[in-house]
Length: 197
Length: 197
DNA sequence: GGTTTAGTATACCAATCGGTATATTTCTTG
DNA sequence: CAAGAAATATACCGATTGGTATACTAAACC
Image (cartoon, rainbow over all chains, first blue to last red; front, side, top):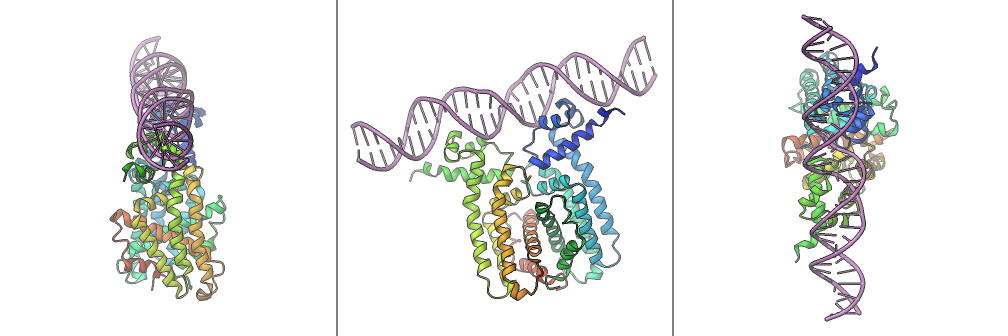
């Protein structure tokens, strides 16, 4: 019943919002603490550093995301295109449900290599990439000889989806438009059958 | 013959390197000045602020890039796939020639919306997007009825290429592998004809 | 009741942040 | 050579940076 109990969670939420809004490096620790109605030492009590805060954030939020994707990719049994479509939908759903965090992820993924923040996300992005690559590998029986193009497919697929989410968000930040099943299906269809399909 | 004469250029180069390496917000003005063997007021003499420095940087480097792409997109007359391939090659070439700047661009494009740095790149990224969209629009005669999917194509195409460059750079930062004509052609082929082609 | 432990706050640290007022040097031009 | 303009440096600004030493409070445990 004590409201104070969820200080930790509160700090994490405020951090996500601010990191999303202004970028990891542009946000001060004091700013996060103030937003969470907490003093700085309290923040440092839960997370031993600013980077530790980011790492905790990523750990708590990325793992469920990876798990969701992994489950879909591994449940694959029917047509590859169905799984691919399911994956695309799930990604858009994730972005929609947890919009600010998803965009934080995207921004960190493309941020400077030597930045500590990048190093913190890297393992998770690698895992997500691996899930997609593994799917293509596994779907080899249905897709025929891919001549080792599994990774190329994974790159293209993720590139399309992420860029799609980024661009759609510019037009409608609720991502309602982005989650239109038909639009997502068009992306998957093009991916699989090209633009003439 | 005075070496000091190109202080301005020197500052710009050092800024690109540092911004690429650590990210715009993570780099201090003093750091840039020191790297360029210059004092801070000198930097502020040429660029009236840190943001002004970034804007000058973008203006000088983005416009030639946009021009190169525009020329290719507008020279289109033969097969759309050839132009698309030429565009993809040009993008990879640009990334290869000016690697650090290109990655800076990518990172800024995906960075937080409310960050001043993002607002500075946005017009240029928009222009690049427009070039691609315009090409698909123009190629309508050869590609048939695209049902207003021009923008979807532009999104997918840019997403694929950018993600491709990002991932390939992880394996070989000279981008030698990335600029392999066959690999690029595979991307374009998949884009146009799907994965079964 | 007394003691520990988790959680929170006050007050502080040196270092750096972006930015500038002002003086000085260097170059160009009349 | 003198004068003005362009370029660079010294020295400083208040504010904020990430981080901490220390003390306090509240609840839990023996």
